[in-house]
Image (cartoon, rainbow, N blue to C red):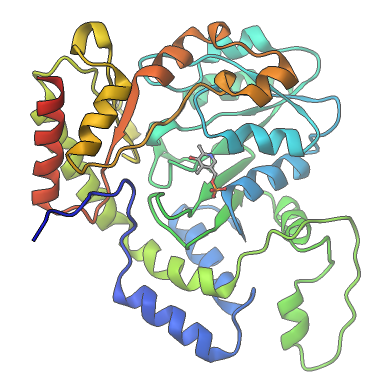
Amino acid sequence: MSPKRIIFGTPSIGDEEIEEVIDTLRSGWIGTGPRVARFEREFAAHKRSPYAVAVNSCTAALHLSLVAAGIGEGDEVITTPLTFCATVNAIIHAGARPVLADIDPRTMNIDPEQIERKLTPRTKALLPVHFAGLPCEMDAIGRIATQHNLKVIEDCAHAIETEYRGQPAGCIGDFGCFSFYPNKNMTTGEGGIILTRSEADAERLRSLALHGMSKDAWKRFIDPRFRHYLVTEVGYKYNMTDLNAAIGLHQIRRLDDFWRRRTEIWNTYDRAFEDLPLVLPTRAAEGVKHARHLYTVLVDRDRAGIDREDFIESLNRRLVGTGVHYLCLAEHPVYQSLFGWRASDFPHASRIGRQTVSLPISPSLSDSEVSTIISAVRESVA
Ligand SMILES: *Cc1c(COP(=O)(O)O)cnc(C)c1O
């Protein structure tokens, strides 16, 4: 048998997920319905949040949160240059202007001092991303937000398990946005969710996610009497379906096991790469829970004797798939032409974006696959 390629970010799907999807298909209700409602309750309880609104992606979650926060034309939103393009696209779709503040190169998270330098009278919100699952400095970010009357929207796409000084990520700012894309810490196929402490915000988000209708369509359909709906604002089509929620209901229950397995792989990597000329992920500070979403190594050609592209190619030849999280946003032509960004304006994010490689860390990896990855990395820098 020839060895199998190790795919980066494979999800772990169990029989319960598969059976729940089949039950949903047979139930006659595959759109937004009872399973989405249950998924929202269970995710909110898991995160100790009073309200959760399920949507069809984290991108949608970010966009709706910005709209619900009152962000629009003429406003500026400060975020990190080391994130997925969806973070800034959501800001642009809300009608606002994204402003980048460089990262702390050690944590790879947005640097509060850089945020302060980017504040203007037009700044209306901060959009921190808990990169790789390590929480941002939320105390400092909260202080800046309070001082300048800014909304805080947390991009928690990497941070389902993240905690900062005893508080779950996504429950610290005004809105917390999560992703259930296939390679995230749990999946619903495609999906996202928004956490908020405000009942009014939750109601508004729910309406915005479904065309701006005044009542959830599924409540209307299960009501024995005929009911008209009224459209109260121009909304979007961002609702999650019961087919997706069916997967998520069982993934929530496996989050702790997934996290423990990723932590085990993480610690194995830390020990196996200790002596190599690579920069390994930083350790989480006291009082912080790291979600261990991405295990990123930095490949500096002068130290490692190989550059990042050759390192990726070398792992690829050894059947190990990798990811790059992320090229600095200022490297992308569309943002350069829209906002005049240059990579050199964000020296930390651009250096890291050119050196970083994410190794597979899915909970579904076998011990022998972990050994294959370790050997491939060691052979590549030797
Ligand atoms: C994956 C990701 C998103 C987008 O999530 P989708 O659910 O695919 O829309 C946003 N921000 C970050 C940091 C991500 O990693």
